[in-house]
Image 1 (cartoon, rainbow, N blue to C red):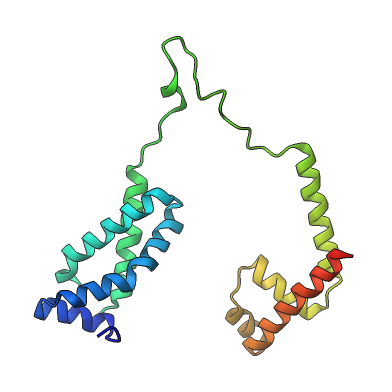
Image 2: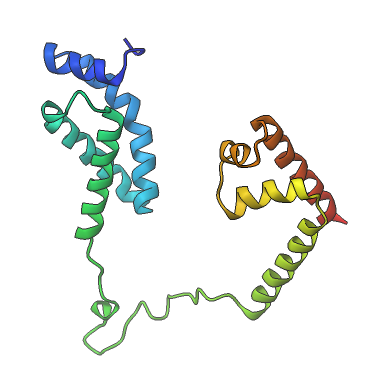
Length: 187
């Protein structure tokens, strides 16, 4: 039964009231939806609640689902909309709300300056310069793969299509480029 398509499971649940079909769908999408919601909201503690709300909405609205469409697309759309609704409802508490009657704010002393120290800025710039110099020493084919993957966020498949190379070649070049880069930086 686990090898049935999403659409077949939805059909079985709606037509035959097959609870097991719904359980399989929930099991199939629980982790992906949770991961999606967490990445979308960047709120670890709330992601579980939002995910639970997504599945409640799915359960309530499953009879309205257009079975000619993709269940996966439908459930992720519900997850996105639920996450957006949560973020809209989330209210920010103004810093002044923590002030005492005397006008003092006990949080003020606990806040950490998030700005990097001048030495950290210098170290980051120095590292960036070393990395750029090391990358410049790589062959063109290695630089292309690294640039497309890290600067343009291309997948290996997209790089392979762009460079008109087999995907295994692209992966191999990426791996070799990192090895050579590590050797250059360790000198």
